[in-house]
Length: 198
Image (cartoon, rainbow, N blue to C red; front, side):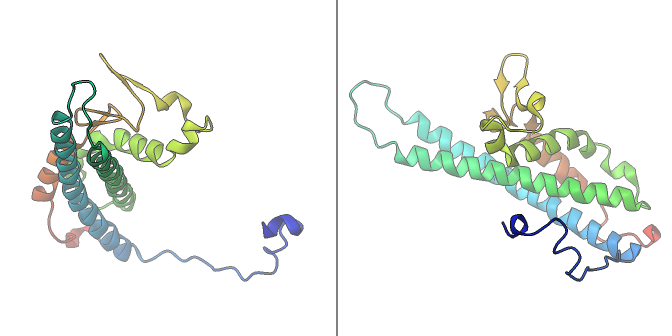
């Protein structure tokens, strides 16, 4: 709002600028590796929470009466649906953070890339589901930046990124399979950044 009241670059010429100096490479590798481990653990934890929330919602829906004119309090089902939606979205964020750190570690180099062969297969779907869910409101308003990516057409279903097909976020990202792959990665990775990665 303030910038509309002043000419362009008004503040740029008067505000002191912070010179950004990158951290030493070894420090960056340590932070990237520790972040990667933290977010890998978050994927496992959050995927379990999504499955638990989905199971709770399914069990509640089974109890929903199908007979006409039966009075039923739907509020618990709504609440369970809200919990599932939030846990699912937080899973996408955790997975996105993991791959942010994965790409950072890749750029820094000096780490055995073979550790990531399996999990890297999930990266395109993670990036799509994290980004599209983060900007879902823009797409609902018709203002999304990647409209061709919004709808996913499977063999026997269609889904936008906010939908869920079995254990597939948006019909694309399987939280159970990513959970399993992440568990295997955590078992194979060293617990500390190898010294040889300097």
